[in-house]
Image (cartoon, rainbow, N blue to C red):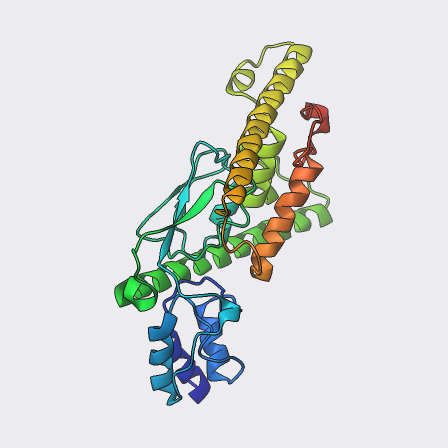
Length: 312
């Protein structure tokens, strides 16, 4: 292990492991690497606060300096809380959470696993219906006074498990795509889509598409295999219309809630200056809603089965 790498490991051990990216890097270890290599200062971590800076200064044999306000302010530790009455089960917050602190699945309501949440705020910006609030849970305590080494160690373990799962999912997805490309090159028929959809549709982002599009047929229409084609088409259209109406109602409630909170100066925090990865998720969600006729001022009719693009 090189001297710089060894130093980065020691720096990483002193960081709170919230993985919030407020330091300007994609996680605590990348920030530690930047400090060790002289590319970043040791006062860019708001969750660590003054105590965190003091710890790093002692390790580096540097003077204690104030927290750089460009990266935020030390604050009481918050916890994400999801308003389940507004949640539409889009899974975007699950994708954004760096420690898998949100439980849920496509088309199901999500909830926060309290003991895992690091208060990083990363789930707030991607939410298309603004149903996540960051609620302070440590009173007036900030920085390491509001966090413990045990919590930091657990957060690191959860983050590493999250990263390992993402890498495994990516490898499996690439293997499926390579196998499909090989079948196509050989002139063999591609494998039919399963009830879970094509390999691409296994991605959470595609699952969100399926929710917004109303692509899944209703249980009634799936079970009635002897219905005439026209009747089945009518049922599918009705199911899509119902899903569209539910989503539009959720969006309307969320917009009203956002307007009320904004008027009171209590709007969502940390929705600006987010990392490039989170901003990409926000842009993707916005593009998806516009493509599906779910924009803020949308008055378009619900999608019909013929309008729903087929994946795969």
